[in-house]
Image (cartoon, rainbow, N blue to C red; front, side, top):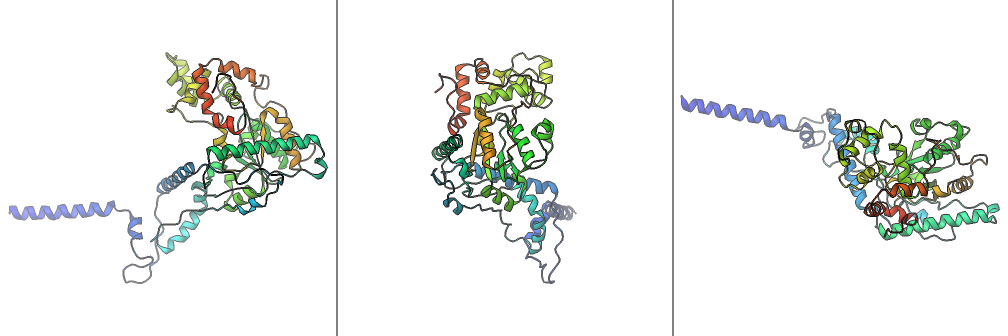
Length: 431
């Protein structure tokens, strides 16, 4: 009797274990282990629809994107594809091409699943890395018109552009040299597209980006004047297209044939401008998201009101957050490096303007692309118009609140931007 009970118990235990084992298997893996389209010897079978949940799809796509971003980080450098020469239309650059690659589907997948993956292809393109090798535009810098070549002003501005591009290339070559360049959707996500005049503009916050978007909207025929476009329309209207919104062919075509430009600003001045805008004025995003975290981490004996609202962040506390490798909240585009926002060592920009000479540089660029003569870069201040613009003097006042060590670490933080865009040291005691 005891032996019979023991034998029955073993059988039941084995059956239960087999049942659990079967239910723990991934149905997708079981299907892929079979010969495509064949189930034993019963002839060709119509495969069932893929039963992967949307959560599984998203997790796999996120993993793919993360893997691609890691690869891009390892390869995020270049040696300049050409030196600046008198011939502005370089034929050598036409030999460079963009190669888009997506990961092949795993071997052994059912043949009939190809249709499913084709349907997913557009979604995958937006999420997975875009691999681009040795991207260079066919154009270097728009050529001066024949009637402009005797104009000393245009010739001088043209020479300044060549020198800026030369310094940028030399910096990339020295500090970020590599044999391959890989561009992911992240690298072109901040680039806005204007198709009529064939312009790609990389947005750098606090360097005239709002007014540049207004100009692009006018060029595109979306408005007759830059004065007619409100701030919220510029930033939240979604009237301008981003480069990562195009398919591979569209990205390839525009990167290689459009005039690519960016405008930059002295890093410390840009940083102070961002701090004044986001933390010294009411803001229902930066105060609760960044302000609360900064005050909680870096302010001793913070009041309940400050911890509740996140208002009243001090510049010194903001700098502590910026320099902390274990920040309580992530980075933001308003104080991130231009090197990260626009990837100038990956994307060969044709025109590099500076905020300090905005009016002259911007109108020269508009002249080069053949924009309407009545269109000039707007001079008005977009936000807090009654407040004085952030100047070198104001910037120095804010940084005077910091210790020499904090100023040095801040300079080190933006060192590549200072070097790449040829800005001098903002304080004499920096090294």
